Amino acid sequence: MILTLIKHSFYLSLSSLLIAWTSIINMSILGRHNSVSFYLFSIFLPLQYVFFAIQDLFRSTALSLSSKKSQNDESVEQMIGLMIISSLFMLTLFCVYHGYLYNVMKFLAVNSSAASEFSFFSQGMFLVNTVAVIHCILSAFLSGRDRVNQSFLFILLTCVMSFIFTLYVEKLKSYIFYQTLSYGLVCVAMFAYLIHRTDFLKANKALSKKNRVIVIKAIKSVGFPVAFSGLMVFWVVFVMSKAVAQFGEDVISGYGIAYRIQAMVYIVAISMGTAVSILMNHPVKLKIQTSFLIKTIVLSIISLVIFLFRDNYLKWLTQNDDIARHASIYLYYVAPSYFFVGFSLAAMTLLEQMGYGKKVVKFNFIYLVSIFLVSKMIFYFQINFNDFCKILSLFNWVTSSLFIVYLLTNKRHFFHL
Image (cartoon, rainbow, N blue to C red):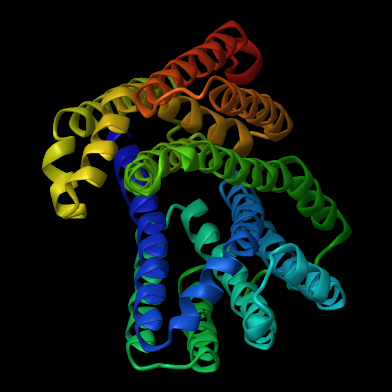
């Protein structure tokens, strides 16, 4: 069971990392052909975070439904219902967005010379992300059915196709078409796999009243809290970036590199929480104490490696010594706290999958308000970057420790220990 947890965590982490890096690489390739593309991708970034939150909403719901024990035909029926609901949701959202497009462009301060390109690009990305949501549901369904290897292979196939197509496109129209095609073809492949390997054809394709209620309850109790948490994480990043902006361009760049490394730790932690939630519904049930022990070991090793070898891998990431120095300072103070922060994120992900998403939203909201107050304090006292890193590290230790203490004092309520 321990090896199974490690395998699930590895594949889920790698899947998330693949998608993130493929998106970055595609943007870089497209930007070489057309400088406007970089601008459009940058302006669109806040909206893309909204799409990520929507994908998390339906992915977490699908994972919660498919990983439940003693569900065969019903989980297939629920998955089909979830795909229909997600498609209707995206269509409704597109209609609202189309109606308020001018207001959105005004809010994002889109340059008038790029207004028409942004209008086409942003609406085209709705099509890409609608298919991506279906892709998320299918891959989550496979993971929940203990086919995490196959789910990873389908995600890898999507990333490879997306990368290859992007190498041969120069215009945004072609980019949107081929991104949609990449996700669409893999969705068809996943459907074919499900028909061949599972009880898909035997299942009832019409969503019964009972399963309709189950799906909607899962969206409300698991999906929406996960989506709200995802949006709050974005606002935390936004607030911290504004706080760092006062220190100058080199510091901002160094912080950006360090935060990318930090994001990789968080992805591993969240994936471990997801893996535990799947295995808790496994026929040979995973003991929660065992999962916490494994998390402690893995996150301790990751934190230690980042702290000790930060200067070595920063040399590979940037040739600018000043940028590398500021990134190293950030990691020197903050990396030791990754253990507690990562552990808290893994536990929050597990709680979300167990139906305690509303409590996680409250924790994240408290964290967001606290980090906002800290950033205001940094502006008011005009502290230097070193002190900023010390304060952030202390803040991570304190907030994560308080959350872990809360978990331990309520372990019987959450985990029935």
